[in-house]
Image 1 (cartoon, helix red, strand yellow):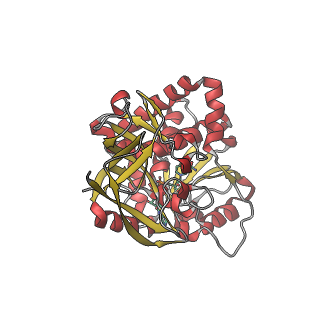
Image 2 (image 1 turned 90 degrees about the horizontal axis):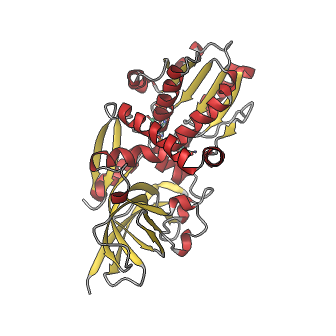
Image 3 (image 1 turned 60 degrees about the vertical axis):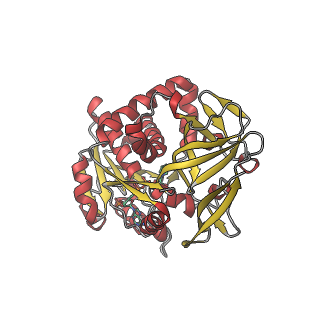
Length: 367
Ligand SMILES: NC(=O)c1ccc[n+]([C@@H]2O[C@H](COP(=O)([O-])OP(=O)(O)OC[C@H]3O[C@@H](n4cnc5c(N)ncnc54)[C@H](OP(=O)(O)O)[C@@H]3O)[C@@H](O)[C@H]2O)c1
């Protein structure tokens, strides 16, 4: 019998600055239907910080329980089976899915097909099934070694962008002549801007797509080529408040919302709340004139899956995803962060908003 040493990156749930690595050991003699995966890589964007910020409210801490007062932030990535005590899961198989920020994940499964398996661990039963499924990469032609890193980074974000674009088009963009996206440099915003730019070109639509971003990211957002206009947060007075605006908010910053709402008044025809990247500035003293609407992606997904059928839905997402992959590949460069020190530094930078939007961050804690 051998001992496997593992490491979890845990954060204090009510004080995200505090972190701890937790070392654990497993015997290589697993119980029936248990599988041990070694996590090879996972992506890290502000979306993972948001998992931590709303972890309590949205149950994100429940996926991978940790020591008292601490939690493990989930992340999307790839892992290889290193030990299996399930007859249909083989050592060496590679799975894409929702992993802890850890070196390993021990799962228990009694639902295995050639497409993948479900983690049936007790503590995951009440959580949304989409997060509990692990895809067998060998059986899915959309996976290739060359695109794995881009898949880890963008795939979890892309479907939300697809659904926002689809929803806005369905609503005829609320008859706005200006579509404005905050945190325009974020990866989810990039995907949305790319989709909207395509739609605009294909359907000769005449709204103006505005990217609102930090001064330091203006050049990056401009060179993406998907926004018609790029404005920094300190130049919002340039917006033509006589036009009708639909806003998609990834920033979550209270004062940006207040400024936009005060400037645009009733010309803010739809205020779509999606992101919370600026998590330390979500609240402010002055109340917001109106609240905006939280975008709940599953509602639009379910509607379209009913109308288009599941395979029709997947096919449309797949085509759009491929177009986006082709368009975004040249815009970002991948940076790998290796080992405990690499992850700790990246986490601290992400938490404090020290983010280079040109960069896609991939972590390998086993390195
Ligand atoms: N509800 C959903 O279904 C759903 C789905 C996907 C994503 N989201 C949310 O959308 C947001 C974007 O996620 P992402 O992973 O795409 O982000 P990302 O690519 O990591 O975003 C990076 C950008 O966000 C802004 N930013 C990040 N951290 C900041 C901070 N601490 N203070 C101020 N600005 C900060 C900066 O943009 P600027 O300079 O341009 O402001 C930065 O360039 C997240 O809150 C995520 O949870 C929600």
